[in-house]
Image (tube, rainbow, N blue to C red; front, side, top):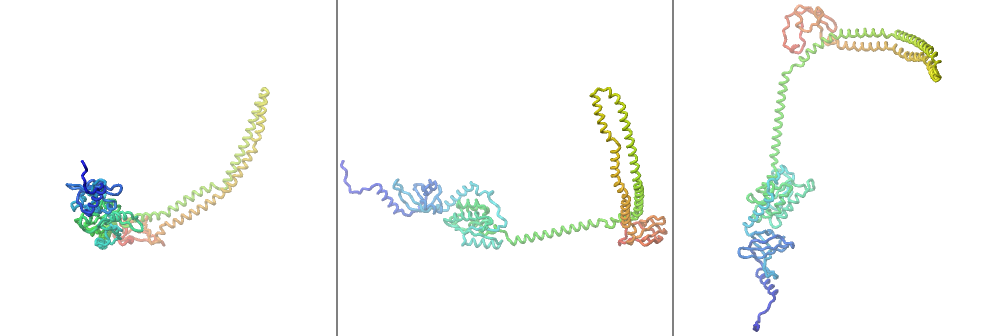
Length: 538
Protein backbone atom coordinates (compact mmCIF):
# COMPACT_ATOMS: atom_id res chain seq x y z
CA UNK A 1 0.00 0.00 0.00
CA UNK A 2 1.59 3.28 -1.00
CA UNK A 3 2.49 5.83 1.78
CA UNK A 4 0.01 8.68 2.09
CA UNK A 5 1.41 12.07 1.34
CA UNK A 6 1.09 14.84 4.08
CA UNK A 7 2.55 18.24 4.71
CA UNK A 8 2.61 17.89 8.60
CA UNK A 9 5.95 18.76 10.19
CA UNK A 10 7.99 16.11 11.91
CA UNK A 11 9.34 16.55 15.51
CA UNK A 12 11.88 14.58 17.38
CA UNK A 13 11.15 13.29 20.85
CA UNK A 14 13.45 15.88 22.37
CA UNK A 15 11.77 18.66 20.44
CA UNK A 16 8.36 17.53 21.63
CA UNK A 17 9.61 17.25 25.23
CA UNK A 18 11.16 20.70 25.12
CA UNK A 19 8.03 22.17 23.58
CA UNK A 20 5.88 20.65 26.29
CA UNK A 21 8.35 21.91 28.95
CA UNK A 22 8.15 25.46 27.61
CA UNK A 23 4.39 25.34 27.42
CA UNK A 24 3.99 24.07 30.97
CA UNK A 25 6.48 26.51 32.44
CA UNK A 26 4.87 29.41 30.58
CA UNK A 27 1.38 28.54 31.67
CA UNK A 28 2.19 27.48 35.22
CA UNK A 29 5.18 29.70 36.06
CA UNK A 30 3.80 30.45 39.55
CA UNK A 31 1.29 28.15 41.24
CA UNK A 32 0.13 27.25 44.76
CA UNK A 33 -0.67 23.59 45.19
CA UNK A 34 -2.43 22.12 48.21
CA UNK A 35 -1.80 18.50 49.06
CA UNK A 36 -0.48 15.93 51.48
CA UNK A 37 3.24 15.12 51.57
CA UNK A 38 3.98 11.49 50.75
CA UNK A 39 7.20 9.57 50.34
CA UNK A 40 9.39 12.17 52.13
CA UNK A 41 12.63 10.57 53.36
CA UNK A 42 14.59 13.69 54.18
CA UNK A 43 17.23 15.41 52.13
CA UNK A 44 19.13 13.51 49.47
CA UNK A 45 22.91 13.26 49.68
CA UNK A 46 23.05 16.12 47.18
CA UNK A 47 21.03 18.35 49.53
CA UNK A 48 17.86 18.29 47.41
CA UNK A 49 14.54 16.90 48.69
CA UNK A 50 12.19 14.68 46.62
CA UNK A 51 8.63 13.63 47.55
CA UNK A 52 5.07 13.55 46.22
CA UNK A 53 2.04 15.80 46.81
CA UNK A 54 -1.26 13.97 46.64
CA UNK A 55 -4.95 14.37 47.27
CA UNK A 56 -7.89 12.06 46.83
CA UNK A 57 -7.73 11.99 42.99
CA UNK A 58 -4.16 12.60 41.81
CA UNK A 59 -0.48 12.87 42.65
CA UNK A 60 2.31 15.16 41.51
CA UNK A 61 6.06 14.83 41.98
CA UNK A 62 7.74 17.61 43.94
CA UNK A 63 11.33 18.71 44.34
CA UNK A 64 12.97 21.30 46.61
CA UNK A 65 16.43 22.36 45.55
CA UNK A 66 19.19 22.57 48.15
CA UNK A 67 19.30 26.39 48.19
CA UNK A 68 15.56 26.71 48.72
CA UNK A 69 15.41 23.99 51.39
CA UNK A 70 17.65 25.97 53.77
CA UNK A 71 15.38 29.03 53.50
CA UNK A 72 12.14 27.22 54.34
CA UNK A 73 10.37 28.36 57.53
CA UNK A 74 8.56 25.03 57.73
CA UNK A 75 10.34 21.85 56.85
CA UNK A 76 8.37 19.14 55.03
CA UNK A 77 7.24 16.19 57.09
CA UNK A 78 5.61 12.91 56.08
CA UNK A 79 1.80 13.08 56.11
CA UNK A 80 1.62 16.86 56.61
CA UNK A 81 -0.95 18.75 54.51
CA UNK A 82 0.75 21.79 53.09
CA UNK A 83 0.37 24.56 50.56
CA UNK A 84 3.39 24.53 48.24
CA UNK A 85 4.32 27.60 46.24
CA UNK A 86 6.49 27.19 43.14
CA UNK A 87 6.41 26.51 39.40
CA UNK A 88 5.53 23.51 37.25
CA UNK A 89 8.09 21.95 34.94
CA UNK A 90 8.71 18.67 33.16
CA UNK A 91 11.45 16.11 33.32
CA UNK A 92 12.08 15.12 29.64
CA UNK A 93 13.83 11.86 30.40
CA UNK A 94 10.74 10.29 31.94
CA UNK A 95 8.04 12.43 30.36
CA UNK A 96 6.80 13.48 33.81
CA UNK A 97 5.86 16.84 35.12
CA UNK A 98 6.69 18.07 38.64
CA UNK A 99 6.48 21.12 40.83
CA UNK A 100 9.66 22.90 41.94
CA UNK A 101 8.78 24.22 45.41
CA UNK A 102 10.20 27.52 46.61
CA UNK A 103 8.08 27.96 49.77
CA UNK A 104 5.98 25.67 51.86
CA UNK A 105 3.51 26.31 54.68
CA UNK A 106 1.00 24.22 56.59
CA UNK A 107 -2.47 24.13 55.16
CA UNK A 108 -4.29 26.17 57.88
CA UNK A 109 -4.26 26.20 61.69
CA UNK A 110 -5.54 22.66 61.89
CA UNK A 111 -2.46 21.36 60.13
CA UNK A 112 -0.18 23.36 62.43
CA UNK A 113 -1.94 22.03 65.49
CA UNK A 114 -1.69 18.49 64.18
CA UNK A 115 2.03 19.00 63.55
CA UNK A 116 2.44 20.57 66.98
CA UNK A 117 0.70 17.68 68.69
CA UNK A 118 2.72 15.11 66.81
CA UNK A 119 5.97 16.87 67.72
CA UNK A 120 4.90 17.19 71.35
CA UNK A 121 4.22 13.45 71.59
CA UNK A 122 7.58 12.68 70.02
CA UNK A 123 9.51 14.86 72.47
CA UNK A 124 7.42 13.62 75.38
CA UNK A 125 8.33 10.04 74.51
CA UNK A 126 12.01 11.02 74.64
CA UNK A 127 11.55 12.28 78.23
CA UNK A 128 12.35 15.94 77.52
CA UNK A 129 9.22 17.05 79.40
CA UNK A 130 9.70 14.88 82.53
CA UNK A 131 9.35 16.63 85.90
CA UNK A 132 12.51 14.92 87.14
CA UNK A 133 14.52 16.99 84.65
CA UNK A 134 13.26 20.31 86.01
CA UNK A 135 15.58 22.10 88.46
CA UNK A 136 14.66 24.55 91.23
CA UNK A 137 15.25 28.20 90.47
CA UNK A 138 17.95 30.02 92.46
CA UNK A 139 16.42 32.06 95.27
CA UNK A 140 18.48 35.21 94.71
CA UNK A 141 20.26 35.19 91.31
CA UNK A 142 23.11 37.66 90.92
CA UNK A 143 23.04 37.72 87.10
CA UNK A 144 19.90 37.22 84.95
CA UNK A 145 20.11 36.43 81.24
CA UNK A 146 17.18 37.56 79.03
CA UNK A 147 16.66 36.22 75.49
CA UNK A 148 14.21 38.44 73.61
CA UNK A 149 13.94 41.26 71.11
CA UNK A 150 15.88 44.36 72.23
CA UNK A 151 13.34 46.77 70.74
CA UNK A 152 10.00 45.43 71.95
CA UNK A 153 7.96 46.26 75.03
CA UNK A 154 8.83 42.89 76.59
CA UNK A 155 12.39 43.80 77.58
CA UNK A 156 11.21 47.14 79.06
CA UNK A 157 8.56 45.38 81.15
CA UNK A 158 11.11 42.85 82.46
CA UNK A 159 13.72 45.48 83.35
CA UNK A 160 11.13 47.70 85.03
CA UNK A 161 9.74 44.84 87.09
CA UNK A 162 13.21 43.65 88.15
CA UNK A 163 14.14 47.19 89.20
CA UNK A 164 10.99 47.46 91.33
CA UNK A 165 11.42 44.10 93.09
CA UNK A 166 15.18 43.52 93.39
CA UNK A 167 17.68 45.40 91.19
CA UNK A 168 19.93 42.82 89.55
CA UNK A 169 22.59 42.55 86.85
CA UNK A 170 20.79 41.76 83.58
CA UNK A 171 22.42 40.48 80.37
CA UNK A 172 20.27 40.76 77.20
CA UNK A 173 20.95 38.52 74.20
CA UNK A 174 19.06 40.12 71.29
CA UNK A 175 17.22 37.72 68.95
CA UNK A 176 14.40 37.84 66.43
CA UNK A 177 11.26 36.44 68.02
CA UNK A 178 9.41 35.83 64.73
CA UNK A 179 10.28 34.64 61.26
CA UNK A 180 12.58 32.16 59.63
CA UNK A 181 15.67 32.98 61.74
CA UNK A 182 13.88 33.01 65.09
CA UNK A 183 14.60 29.39 66.05
CA UNK A 184 18.33 29.30 65.21
CA UNK A 185 18.94 32.64 66.94
CA UNK A 186 17.21 31.47 70.14
CA UNK A 187 19.22 28.24 70.05
CA UNK A 188 22.45 30.20 69.65
CA UNK A 189 21.51 32.49 72.55
CA UNK A 190 20.82 29.59 74.94
CA UNK A 191 24.02 27.80 73.97
CA UNK A 192 25.99 31.05 74.14
CA UNK A 193 24.89 31.80 77.71
CA UNK A 194 25.75 28.24 78.75
CA UNK A 195 29.19 28.57 77.16
CA UNK A 196 30.14 31.49 79.44
CA UNK A 197 32.61 30.49 82.17
CA UNK A 198 31.93 31.30 85.84
CA UNK A 199 34.19 34.14 86.96
CA UNK A 200 34.98 35.17 83.40
CA UNK A 201 35.06 38.65 81.89
CA UNK A 202 31.35 38.35 81.09
CA UNK A 203 29.53 36.88 84.12
CA UNK A 204 27.61 33.67 83.60
CA UNK A 205 23.88 34.08 84.31
CA UNK A 206 22.30 32.20 87.20
CA UNK A 207 18.93 32.02 85.42
CA UNK A 208 17.62 32.54 81.85
CA UNK A 209 14.34 34.12 80.73
CA UNK A 210 13.13 33.37 77.17
CA UNK A 211 10.40 35.93 76.52
CA UNK A 212 8.12 37.17 73.73
CA UNK A 213 4.83 38.99 73.49
CA UNK A 214 1.55 37.46 72.35
CA UNK A 215 0.68 36.50 68.77
CA UNK A 216 -0.85 33.88 66.51
CA UNK A 217 0.37 30.31 66.31
CA UNK A 218 2.31 31.21 63.20
CA UNK A 219 4.01 34.09 65.00
CA UNK A 220 4.98 31.83 67.92
CA UNK A 221 6.00 28.88 65.75
CA UNK A 222 9.71 29.54 66.18
CA UNK A 223 9.41 28.52 69.85
CA UNK A 224 7.80 25.22 68.81
CA UNK A 225 10.77 24.15 66.74
CA UNK A 226 12.44 20.95 67.85
CA UNK A 227 15.90 22.54 67.97
CA UNK A 228 14.70 25.22 70.42
CA UNK A 229 13.02 22.66 72.66
CA UNK A 230 16.15 20.50 72.77
CA UNK A 231 18.35 23.52 73.55
CA UNK A 232 16.11 24.48 76.48
CA UNK A 233 16.12 20.90 77.80
CA UNK A 234 19.92 20.64 77.52
CA UNK A 235 20.62 24.01 79.17
CA UNK A 236 22.79 23.87 82.27
CA UNK A 237 21.20 27.11 83.51
CA UNK A 238 17.59 27.04 84.77
CA UNK A 239 15.21 28.49 82.15
CA UNK A 240 11.94 30.39 82.60
CA UNK A 241 9.76 30.45 79.48
CA UNK A 242 7.53 33.50 79.04
CA UNK A 243 6.31 33.28 75.43
CA UNK A 244 2.99 34.87 74.54
CA UNK A 245 0.05 35.58 76.80
CA UNK A 246 -1.37 33.36 79.50
CA UNK A 247 -3.51 31.44 76.98
CA UNK A 248 -0.59 30.82 74.59
CA UNK A 249 1.32 27.56 74.93
CA UNK A 250 4.51 26.55 73.13
CA UNK A 251 6.66 23.44 73.36
CA UNK A 252 9.44 25.19 75.28
CA UNK A 253 6.89 25.72 78.07
CA UNK A 254 6.99 21.95 78.63
CA UNK A 255 10.80 21.70 78.45
CA UNK A 256 11.64 24.76 80.60
CA UNK A 257 12.14 24.59 84.35
CA UNK A 258 9.26 27.01 84.91
CA UNK A 259 6.53 28.51 82.70
CA UNK A 260 5.48 32.10 83.35
CA UNK A 261 2.15 33.30 81.87
CA UNK A 262 3.66 36.66 80.90
CA UNK A 263 7.13 38.24 80.72
CA UNK A 264 6.27 40.39 83.76
CA UNK A 265 5.38 37.26 85.72
CA UNK A 266 8.73 35.76 84.69
CA UNK A 267 10.55 38.75 86.20
CA UNK A 268 8.54 38.35 89.41
CA UNK A 269 9.40 34.64 89.58
CA UNK A 270 13.10 35.29 89.01
CA UNK A 271 13.75 37.53 92.06
CA UNK A 272 12.06 38.13 95.42
CA UNK A 273 10.96 41.54 96.70
CA UNK A 274 13.94 43.28 98.29
CA UNK A 275 11.82 45.34 100.68
CA UNK A 276 10.06 42.20 101.91
CA UNK A 277 13.42 40.51 102.47
CA UNK A 278 14.69 43.47 104.49
CA UNK A 279 11.50 43.50 106.56
CA UNK A 280 11.76 39.76 107.12
CA UNK A 281 15.38 39.99 108.24
CA UNK A 282 14.54 42.88 110.58
CA UNK A 283 11.64 40.92 112.04
CA UNK A 284 13.82 37.85 112.57
CA UNK A 285 16.50 40.00 114.23
CA UNK A 286 13.94 41.59 116.54
CA UNK A 287 12.53 38.20 117.50
CA UNK A 288 16.04 36.91 118.15
CA UNK A 289 16.85 39.85 120.42
CA UNK A 290 13.60 39.40 122.32
CA UNK A 291 14.28 35.68 122.75
CA UNK A 292 17.80 36.42 124.03
CA UNK A 293 16.43 39.03 126.43
CA UNK A 294 13.79 36.61 127.78
CA UNK A 295 16.40 33.86 128.16
CA UNK A 296 18.72 36.24 130.04
CA UNK A 297 15.95 37.33 132.39
CA UNK A 298 15.04 33.70 133.06
CA UNK A 299 18.66 32.88 133.87
CA UNK A 300 18.87 35.88 136.20
CA UNK A 301 15.74 34.73 138.05
CA UNK A 302 17.12 31.21 138.39
CA UNK A 303 20.45 32.55 139.65
CA UNK A 304 18.70 34.80 142.16
CA UNK A 305 16.57 31.88 143.41
CA UNK A 306 19.62 29.63 143.70
CA UNK A 307 21.55 32.34 145.55
CA UNK A 308 18.73 32.78 148.06
CA UNK A 309 19.02 29.14 149.09
CA UNK A 310 22.78 29.26 149.71
CA UNK A 311 24.19 29.96 153.21
CA UNK A 312 26.27 33.06 153.85
CA UNK A 313 30.01 32.84 153.32
CA UNK A 314 30.72 33.77 156.95
CA UNK A 315 28.52 30.91 158.15
CA UNK A 316 30.39 28.43 155.98
CA UNK A 317 33.80 29.26 157.49
CA UNK A 318 32.71 29.98 161.07
CA UNK A 319 33.47 26.48 162.38
CA UNK A 320 36.78 26.29 160.52
CA UNK A 321 37.73 29.74 161.84
CA UNK A 322 37.07 28.62 165.41
CA UNK A 323 39.08 25.42 164.85
CA UNK A 324 41.94 27.53 163.50
CA UNK A 325 41.90 29.76 166.59
CA UNK A 326 42.03 26.73 168.89
CA UNK A 327 44.83 25.16 166.84
CA UNK A 328 46.86 28.38 166.94
CA UNK A 329 46.43 28.48 170.72
CA UNK A 330 47.81 24.94 171.00
CA UNK A 331 50.57 25.50 168.45
CA UNK A 332 52.96 27.20 170.88
CA UNK A 333 53.12 24.32 173.34
CA UNK A 334 53.23 21.76 170.51
CA UNK A 335 56.20 23.46 168.88
CA UNK A 336 57.95 23.74 172.24
CA UNK A 337 57.57 20.00 172.91
CA UNK A 338 58.73 19.21 169.37
CA UNK A 339 61.88 21.32 169.75
CA UNK A 340 62.69 19.76 173.11
CA UNK A 341 62.27 16.24 171.69
CA UNK A 342 64.54 17.02 168.73
CA UNK A 343 67.12 18.64 171.01
CA UNK A 344 67.20 15.58 173.29
CA UNK A 345 67.62 13.24 170.32
CA UNK A 346 70.42 15.43 168.98
CA UNK A 347 72.19 15.41 172.36
CA UNK A 348 72.08 11.62 172.46
CA UNK A 349 73.44 11.34 168.95
CA UNK A 350 76.15 13.96 169.56
CA UNK A 351 77.42 12.08 172.64
CA UNK A 352 78.06 8.96 170.58
CA UNK A 353 79.86 10.85 167.78
CA UNK A 354 82.73 12.57 169.69
CA UNK A 355 86.18 12.43 167.97
CA UNK A 356 87.78 10.91 171.06
CA UNK A 357 85.41 7.96 171.00
CA UNK A 358 85.92 7.47 167.27
CA UNK A 359 89.70 7.54 167.70
CA UNK A 360 89.53 5.04 170.59
CA UNK A 361 87.35 2.77 168.48
CA UNK A 362 89.94 2.95 165.70
CA UNK A 363 92.79 2.04 168.07
CA UNK A 364 90.86 -0.93 169.46
CA UNK A 365 90.23 -2.25 165.96
CA UNK A 366 93.94 -1.84 165.09
CA UNK A 367 95.02 -3.80 168.18
CA UNK A 368 92.59 -6.57 167.34
CA UNK A 369 93.96 -6.71 163.82
CA UNK A 370 97.57 -7.00 165.08
CA UNK A 371 96.60 -9.78 167.45
CA UNK A 372 94.85 -11.68 164.67
CA UNK A 373 97.94 -11.19 162.48
CA UNK A 374 100.27 -12.72 165.06
CA UNK A 375 97.95 -15.63 165.70
CA UNK A 376 97.56 -16.34 161.97
CA UNK A 377 101.34 -16.29 161.39
CA UNK A 378 102.03 -18.64 164.33
CA UNK A 379 99.33 -21.05 163.24
CA UNK A 380 100.65 -21.11 159.69
CA UNK A 381 104.21 -21.91 160.86
CA UNK A 382 102.95 -24.74 163.04
CA UNK A 383 100.96 -26.21 160.19
CA UNK A 384 103.96 -26.11 157.86
CA UNK A 385 106.20 -27.75 160.44
CA UNK A 386 103.73 -30.54 161.07
CA UNK A 387 103.38 -31.18 157.36
CA UNK A 388 107.20 -31.32 156.94
CA UNK A 389 107.55 -33.81 159.81
CA UNK A 390 104.83 -35.94 158.32
CA UNK A 391 106.06 -36.06 154.72
CA UNK A 392 109.88 -36.16 155.10
CA UNK A 393 110.07 -39.78 156.40
CA UNK A 394 107.72 -40.94 153.68
CA UNK A 395 109.55 -39.16 150.93
CA UNK A 396 112.57 -41.47 151.30
CA UNK A 397 110.42 -44.47 150.46
CA UNK A 398 108.86 -43.04 147.30
CA UNK A 399 110.23 -43.73 143.79
CA UNK A 400 112.43 -41.19 142.08
CA UNK A 401 109.62 -39.68 139.99
CA UNK A 402 107.47 -39.19 143.04
CA UNK A 403 110.37 -37.70 144.89
CA UNK A 404 110.98 -35.31 142.08
CA UNK A 405 107.31 -34.30 142.11
CA UNK A 406 107.48 -33.79 145.83
CA UNK A 407 110.57 -31.63 145.42
CA UNK A 408 108.69 -29.50 142.86
CA UNK A 409 105.81 -29.11 145.31
CA UNK A 410 108.22 -28.14 148.06
CA UNK A 411 109.95 -25.60 145.86
CA UNK A 412 106.56 -24.15 144.92
CA UNK A 413 105.58 -23.94 148.56
CA UNK A 414 108.92 -22.24 149.34
CA UNK A 415 108.12 -19.59 146.72
CA UNK A 416 104.61 -19.07 148.04
CA UNK A 417 105.39 -19.10 151.74
CA UNK A 418 107.13 -15.68 151.75
CA UNK A 419 103.89 -14.18 150.57
CA UNK A 420 102.16 -15.52 153.67
CA UNK A 421 104.44 -13.58 156.01
CA UNK A 422 102.99 -10.66 158.09
CA UNK A 423 104.68 -8.00 155.90
CA UNK A 424 101.89 -7.88 153.25
CA UNK A 425 99.28 -7.84 155.98
CA UNK A 426 101.00 -4.94 157.66
CA UNK A 427 101.16 -3.05 154.36
CA UNK A 428 97.45 -3.59 153.89
CA UNK A 429 96.85 -2.39 157.45
CA UNK A 430 98.84 0.79 156.80
CA UNK A 431 96.77 1.41 153.66
CA UNK A 432 93.56 1.01 155.65
CA UNK A 433 94.87 3.44 158.27
CA UNK A 434 95.60 5.99 155.52
CA UNK A 435 92.00 5.63 154.28
CA UNK A 436 90.52 5.92 157.80
CA UNK A 437 92.34 9.10 158.76
CA UNK A 438 90.41 11.40 156.32
CA UNK A 439 87.21 9.76 157.44
CA UNK A 440 88.09 10.43 161.07
CA UNK A 441 88.77 14.08 160.27
CA UNK A 442 85.46 14.42 158.44
CA UNK A 443 83.74 12.66 161.35
CA UNK A 444 85.13 15.28 163.70
CA UNK A 445 83.38 18.01 161.67
CA UNK A 446 79.98 16.31 161.75
CA UNK A 447 78.91 17.46 165.27
CA UNK A 448 79.54 21.11 164.43
CA UNK A 449 77.63 20.77 161.16
CA UNK A 450 74.70 19.04 162.84
CA UNK A 451 74.65 21.70 165.55
CA UNK A 452 74.49 24.46 162.91
CA UNK A 453 71.68 22.71 161.00
CA UNK A 454 69.67 22.16 164.18
CA UNK A 455 70.04 25.81 165.09
CA UNK A 456 68.77 26.82 161.63
CA UNK A 457 65.75 24.51 161.98
CA UNK A 458 65.07 25.86 165.48
CA UNK A 459 65.21 29.44 164.18
CA UNK A 460 62.74 28.61 161.38
CA UNK A 461 60.38 26.85 163.79
CA UNK A 462 60.56 29.82 166.14
CA UNK A 463 59.57 32.17 163.31
CA UNK A 464 56.73 29.81 162.34
CA UNK A 465 55.60 29.72 165.95
CA UNK A 466 55.53 33.48 166.10
CA UNK A 467 53.53 33.60 162.89
CA UNK A 468 50.94 31.01 163.94
CA UNK A 469 50.81 31.94 167.62
CA UNK A 470 47.53 33.13 168.98
CA UNK A 471 49.30 36.23 170.21
CA UNK A 472 49.50 37.49 166.65
CA UNK A 473 45.71 37.03 166.52
CA UNK A 474 45.40 39.03 169.75
CA UNK A 475 47.36 41.83 168.10
CA UNK A 476 44.59 42.18 165.51
CA UNK A 477 42.02 43.10 168.22
CA UNK A 478 40.89 39.70 169.49
CA UNK A 479 41.01 38.45 173.13
CA UNK A 480 41.57 35.02 174.71
CA UNK A 481 38.88 34.17 177.26
CA UNK A 482 39.75 31.71 180.08
CA UNK A 483 37.89 30.64 183.17
CA UNK A 484 39.30 30.36 186.71
CA UNK A 485 40.78 26.93 185.94
CA UNK A 486 42.65 28.31 182.92
CA UNK A 487 40.47 26.53 180.35
CA UNK A 488 39.66 28.35 177.14
CA UNK A 489 36.05 29.59 176.91
CA UNK A 490 34.92 29.31 173.28
CA UNK A 491 31.11 29.67 173.61
CA UNK A 492 28.74 31.85 175.60
CA UNK A 493 26.95 28.77 176.87
CA UNK A 494 30.02 27.80 178.96
CA UNK A 495 29.61 30.75 181.38
CA UNK A 496 26.86 31.91 183.67
CA UNK A 497 26.28 35.08 185.65
CA UNK A 498 28.79 35.52 188.44
CA UNK A 499 31.67 33.58 186.84
CA UNK A 500 35.12 35.09 186.98
CA UNK A 501 36.93 35.22 183.65
CA UNK A 502 40.44 36.17 182.59
CA UNK A 503 40.78 38.14 179.35
CA UNK A 504 44.18 38.02 177.63
CA UNK A 505 44.94 40.89 175.24
CA UNK A 506 48.03 41.54 173.18
CA UNK A 507 49.47 43.88 175.83
CA UNK A 508 48.32 42.15 179.04
CA UNK A 509 45.61 40.41 181.02
CA UNK A 510 42.49 41.73 182.84
CA UNK A 511 39.84 40.08 185.02
CA UNK A 512 36.11 40.21 184.37
CA UNK A 513 32.87 39.07 186.03
CA UNK A 514 29.91 37.74 184.03
CA UNK A 515 26.66 39.66 184.60
CA UNK A 516 23.22 39.61 182.97
CA UNK A 517 20.68 37.01 181.93
CA UNK A 518 21.76 33.64 180.53
CA UNK A 519 22.39 33.69 176.76
CA UNK A 520 19.55 32.81 174.43
CA UNK A 521 19.83 29.85 172.08
CA UNK A 522 20.64 30.96 168.55
CA UNK A 523 19.60 29.44 165.29
CA UNK A 524 21.98 26.91 163.78
CA UNK A 525 24.57 28.28 161.46
CA UNK A 526 24.55 31.82 162.99
CA UNK A 527 27.63 32.67 165.05
CA UNK A 528 27.51 36.44 164.93
CA UNK A 529 25.03 39.25 165.27
CA UNK A 530 23.00 40.45 162.34
CA UNK A 531 25.23 43.43 161.78
CA UNK A 532 28.30 41.22 161.38
CA UNK A 533 30.11 42.41 164.61
CA UNK A 534 31.33 40.13 167.45
CA UNK A 535 28.74 39.54 170.18
CA UNK A 536 29.56 40.87 173.65
CA UNK A 537 30.13 38.48 176.57
CA UNK A 538 29.38 41.06 179.30
